[in-house]
Length: 192
Image 1: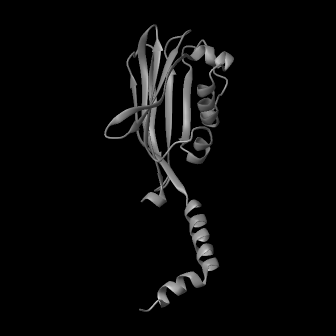
Image 2: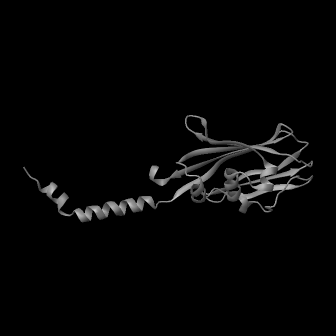
Image 3: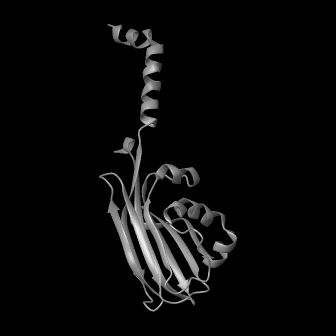
């Protein structure tokens, strides 16, 4: 019986360990990608305002950004907001957060930690960050060229790879007046 192959395997254990460590370091340093897959904006009360822009713009093959613009037609004093997060797994399933809050209270007091983290993430993409209530007539609310930076996002919200969706519902006088639905995919090259 020839044991030559097994003796080679154990003859250089330091080399094998170095190759294993190098491989793990290489795999862990591979970049992860994320990009928006869909965006849908719906205005249910045309007398309140109008959606001027709701689009995904391709930057390159691996990156894209979203831009949304909404112009107020009426002054609004009290806006409730509902944030719902979903994960795709044999259909869309609720995931982690389903939060309702008063947007005016948040803008004046910054009193919700989860919403505060999300707000800090999108703040660089909002040209005027000092929004306050009331939202006045002819006021333009916009978010421009928002890119999904998964590394920045994962620092605050550790999530696994997959496709996620966010639905934002704006509620005025107990009626849903505007919804923003979007989905993003986050994947790791090690899994493809």
